[in-house]
Image 1: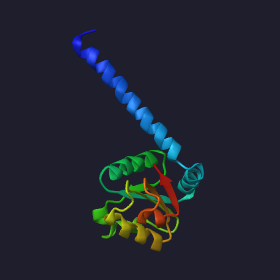
Image 2: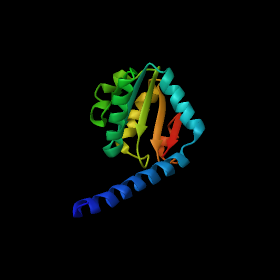
Image 3: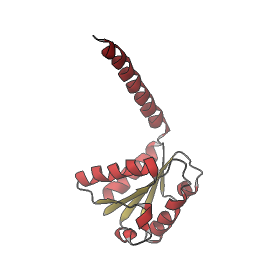
Image 4: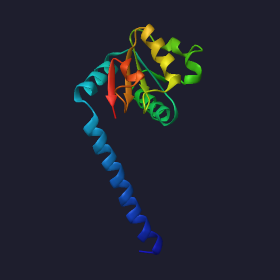
Length: 143
């Protein structure tokens, strides 16, 4: 084992331990009933729309990709385009997934209002159950 390998292996082990700890903590925060409700909503809807800003947006963009791979029609709606026609994808048989770490992202509030006015079921993924986005959701997944 050379000098670089001696450094690389412990760094890898530490990175895996950090990720495992984060997953364990997230699992402990998820309410099983809310998770079941979210899965049921996603499995019974006609389309899924998702929106988030920053890192939350990147995560939801990948989530949309995975749904499409599973042949569940889904679209990521950017906050820039949502109020300019993109929300036409959302209907009463849709699920709107919104992710915001703090649950207060101002750009997402109008998206939630439009989805609500169209009759979509709203799932919010956040750390803050007392946030405006969480309070406007049908289902809240705390992470």
